[in-house]
Image 1 (spheres, rainbow over the protein chains, first blue to last red):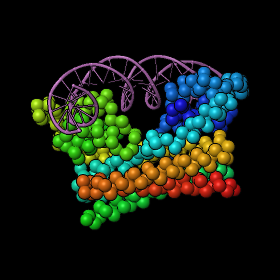
Image 2 (cartoon, rainbow over the protein chains, first blue to last red; image 1 turned 90 degrees about the vertical axis):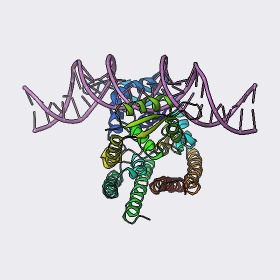
Image 3 (cartoon, rainbow over the protein chains, first blue to last red; image 1 turned 45 degrees about the vertical axis):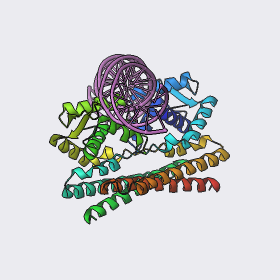
Image 4 (cartoon, protein in one colour; image 1 turned 180 degrees about the horizontal axis):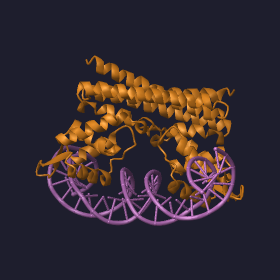
Length: 178
Length: 178
DNA sequence: GGCGACATGTAACCAGTTACATGATTGA
DNA sequence: TCAATCATGTAACTGGTTACATGTCGCC
């Protein structure tokens, strides 16, 4: 079974392909989630691996004399991508949501009440502007997103709304401690 | 600045301390998020590192003749933990939520409409039972959780509610495609 | 003429996992 | 007595990042 970044990269080539490895990197870099850096050191060997497995294939394409390799997903690759997507209901995929902000709330006991209130307020502000950013992502690119792309972006918005709501609870709980 | 797992481990020692490295591992292993495995190979060297930095200190304690090292957070460690918690409003911490389920929704185009509906339904079921699990976490341990611990667990529940709501949207959108 | 984007790659490093090794204690 | 839990550790591996190297093209 493909690992996370492999499935993601394969999916990107599928949706944006034929495209270059460089494109895959840019999409990963500019994605609102900062989880993957899309570093050259991971992407190029990874795509070589997928090519060796015949999940993607490359076509040499000297665009403006500048050599580049246009990648696209093979029939085998499509099958692998399908299997990877279907694996999304597995327990370890379902359980894998971790939020460093929430983690820090757990350990706010280490702070003084005053510090707690201050940090929580800062987090709330930051989460709110991040939420707006994820909303703009949909509005701004409404037309260039596929229906499922829009749906995925909506998922990000909903998650961020939940994070904001959570942090509001935290702020409230810290204001009048029971 | 402490990295994620370091801050987390330090926080665990702070909240559960004095405790053994073994305890830290168990808490990480049994946490509902499967993000950290709490492998011996990471935890022991990590805690040695924190001890070398004088953020935690160990007291030898031959409990039942069984040798064990009880760890607790030093004054310096408390300061480091505070700084780490306060760093939770930084952009890269705020942005670091990634959900492999949502990622897979992005690439459902690769499936046939029938497969799409089926996978989405599976994901919804899995997410719903995971939500119930996170709810039980609060109910079951209501008394043994600190106020902020309860709040953190609430955050997990809220996130999981958002994931379920999102997946319901996906299922609905796949039923009658616009 | 130089800067930024396009494009591809590699080597050194880092952090976490797997799998193993060891040994004491507790309870069925 | 035998398995499970408590307890500590190490070596090999893996998968990603950082930082570097190289070269073209388009634009100011």
